[in-house]
Length: 317
Image (cartoon, rainbow, N blue to C red; front, side):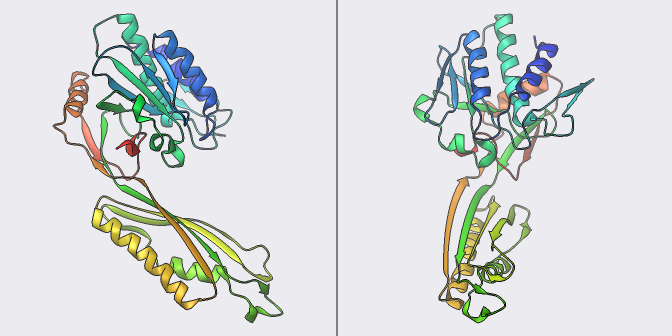
């Protein structure tokens, strides 16, 4: 039986351990100790993902990610009845330490109850918040599961994330030519001007029900009286339609080539990468039916919803 007091205490202990993306080592050590006490064989893959296994065939994977976004250092959780908050100076870290705590409490309770259950393999990944880096580099040779339940996402506890879009990220570097803006501006080629024209040729915001586009990063220039030599900017687009993803990629390329044609002496370089691929859960899949049946047993109505983001293992394929 779930021990709510232990669950809350364990969650609060977890969020007090700093683990911003790429700095998950302390929380990984904490979880390793707890899992070993529960009898799991704990290992780390080359990227630092934590993989805990136990004997038995056909294990079910339980997964969450260890990292949090910033500001996520020196978190001070405040328990107020049924609600846990931060003290207002940081995030709380519920994404995804609520999922981590839930998995650990389920394992603790199952051991205490000593009731027969399916073997479990636990996977806690790194770097989810910076592009699902842990999932992308997970060592599949260490994974023995065909089914997984991922404790990530948001919303009420009865929410199941039924689909997620393909996510494409792109980064562009524009190199122009510097000059004194007040003395000889005609000798310069403004990287900021070129970047602004490229961005102006790109779509923005919600394009349709299943597609979004955003340029969210830009940096360039050094002083106000110099024609800027270099600008970098980065963006993303997401869609659940493969043709739309391809067309948007082409649109980015066309905008860049248009600028190259107009500003022949400038140098424009780009990188584009698929960070995760879309998926849609079949409600009739055994693992989905298992989760929905459990929710119904708990008197909760399963609510399968789409997501515009990605979850811990979206990149695992």
